Image (cartoon, rainbow, N blue to C red):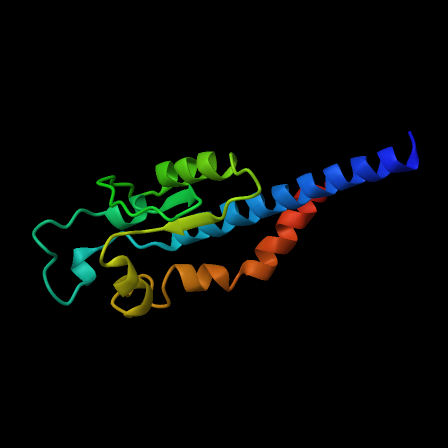
Length: 147
C-alpha cells in the first residue's frame, strides 16, 4: 500500500469508528431513558388516575428518528420497555452518520414526569438522570468499538 492509500484506509476506519461510537452512545442513553421511565402505579398516586390511563404507555412512546423529531403519539403499551428498546435499536443501527438522531416522547405528561416531580418512581426524571451518565456511557462505547 502507498502512504496515500494508508491514509485513506485510516480515515475510512476512523470515520466508521466515530459513527459506531455515536450509535453505541445513542442506544445506551436511550435504553437508560426507557428503563428509567416509570410505569404508573395508581396505588402511589395522591389522586385517582385519569379515566383513560394506560399503564406502560409513557414507556412505549419513546421514539427514535432521524432528521426531525417525531410529532406523533403512539398507542403502544410497553410496561417492560423491551419492545420500545428493540424498536429504538433498529432505528439507530441504521443511522447514516449525517442526519441528527432524535429521541422524543410526545405524550403531554412526559414533560411533567421529567420536570414536575410528580413521580415518586422517577423524582429526578428519566432523561436528565440518564444524560448525567454520559461520560460513563461514552467511555464504555469507545472501549467496545475499539475492541
